[in-house]
Image (cartoon, helix red, strand yellow):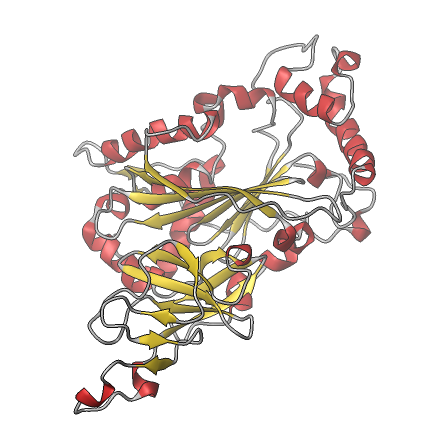
Length: 430
């Protein structure tokens, strides 16, 4: 995509095209999606070694707020301490192995195990053992406190790494903060929070959001709203992105567009533009939309000064290795976290959160309830429903003896790039 921005010197998100690495053209073995042995390698060499998102800081705003989350076989406890620092602990009492907290979230001035009332301070220190004198071997507090996990914050998210010797979070994120700080994620407000158990491998889901080759097939409605041909793909050390022009129909559609497509017209009307004035001139909409969006945004209390004109219309889609995919729009973030199932390579947990930009001075709305369900039990909206219906069939097909592996096109090279990064961590094993 040829990005044009007359105010480029003031824009923070880099728009330059990254060099294209040579990733080869080999088939990606299906065993990476179906094998329990490969799943075990992922646990040993990826999930216990990389930085992962645990929660939003806004989910634990006050002293004593906590939230639990799982990754693989591990349950984690994220707590806001007396010093307002967010800490991450293994959610296990060192007495008899009971989970310290069973619920999704709550608030407590101490962390007390429900089994025998062993009690921990918010910094994980063991502070009370009933009948402590009965332990003839003693109860050394420095040995029996909650085990803390390396953690950090960026973008309004609390991150953790199960590897105590991991590199700093900022080093792992690499280019990401410099690219995305301008969106001010920490100021966004969560508007939806759901977890769905999907019948597919976690990578099957990541793959679906790492390419737009499928959109004209699975999501034909989007072809009238975004340009899936003239997009920019950038592959970095671990992470990747594509920049997709919105408010512009796909060149795949052979249509003179005597009228602006409804999907584009809706966005125009929302900012006071008249779609009827663009009959036969739909190619001019995107640029005019950008200019109008900046004007209207300022009037409505939104500060877009750190963003380019293209960022006011387009989807800046980033993948943070291994399992975060984000559709980033000027006023909305669609955030997907793909987590592996604890034992089955054919299942995963799909966390969907949406966030909204708030006008200056607006109060933060209450957090939405966290909902959990299995695929098919309720709708996620048209586009995500289309993906969720398709992905279990992809996973089932991968188990066929007739199928060898992924035959990747140049359009899908973000998938190949992710697998190259997987191999960097795991080695050459299938």
